[in-house]
Length: 109
Image 1 (cartoon, rainbow, N blue to C red):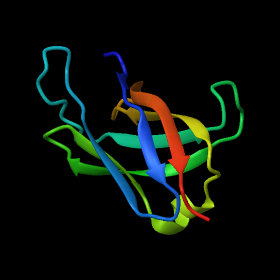
Image 2: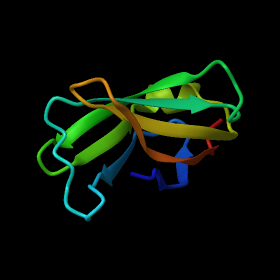
Image 3: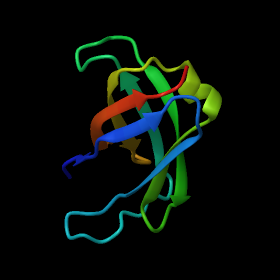
Image 4: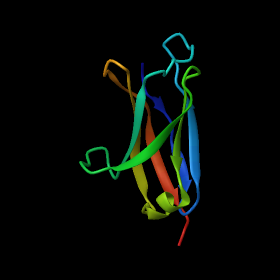
């Protein structure tokens, strides 16, 4: 399964949520029962350090996940572009990058 490319705009100092539908190759929802997920923001694709972002399961049977940040978390981000990815891990330990892109943080004081 290829990662879904999604570019995001995040306003600094506000609450943020973005939902994603994860599907099988045939387009049917991927059943995420037993899966875990993680999201990382990096200042560049080659950066070693990263910022961990919360991922929630909106509907495990429906394959829907969401990236969630509080206003405090977005306020702590620099106004800049970040490379990000969401990786899911199957119950057997197989990791798959399902969403990736550029997150642009704007606004704020």
